[in-house]
Image (tube, rainbow over all chains, first blue to last red):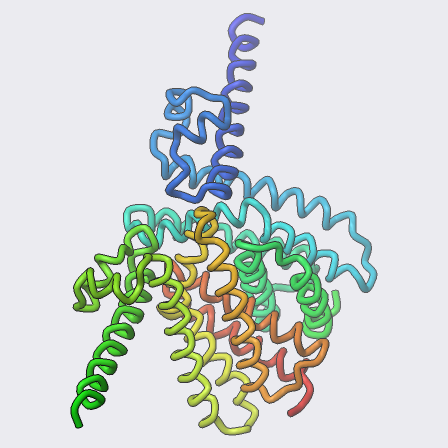
Length: 201
Length: 201
């Protein structure tokens, strides 16, 4: 019972610290932008010392990349679970689009947007962000294909990609104002267009 | 022949200086982001003294707001002229979408994106940028309605709004990489969906 029992809580604590840092990093980015989000600010929000933060994430870039990747995985899993509870009725596509629109107008999208735009002006961050963007794009594509219950065939593929671009546009439209009234009508119309375009599952 | 003839060229010169500053401001924002775009940098690129730049635009915010508004008007007029030369055949919607996608993946969108994202983290710029965003959004909506030759009725309105959000998403997708291959398929599919959704003009 000795050593493993001691190691276990330490590992748990370390994992919990890491997760607090990642969640705090996304919150900071979303609220303050990249320039206002230093490791010190994130560590403070997470209730962790600057030294502990740097132990987990030696550079600021590593912290923010890991943060967007981690929170993205968590949110996509949540949406997958919510989608599984939706019925198969005629409102299913619209309900799915609402779930996705909530994701793309939330804190995670806002954080990612600040990171992408910072990378556009900072060449040393660019390569890592481009890989992360491609990885998250592929995961989002697979998740939407799965939730809509359609095959990933030509035509469908482009419609799903268009859906993801529309969602990014809705996210951008919600950056400076509460765009929810305009968005509701677009989501409804988009669901109609998807239902008449996609093969029946 | 005296005073008016002298004043005329001065007014022309002043207008030309102003336009050079506005074009340079959009180029700077697109390339360097908001933090890297000071009035000094813009004046230098435009070949204008810092004093002359401040005579035209007393604050940095005024310069960038006027720049995005001016370049946006110029580009929308260009697109309107190009759209007028397109035939009425079955490829018209796709050709229109390509014109619009070129606009939303170009320098102007990139500049506007940097300005919007900066405003999200800088409360004192926010109000003016929100007004500008709303104004440009209304103009883009009217322009797309006109180019597609459709009535601005319920259903059509939301489809056109979705088109503008999709275009914003495509612009964002082109921020860090050349996204043109993926985009071509989406634009084609979107044009098909528009043709089967919108009333025939």
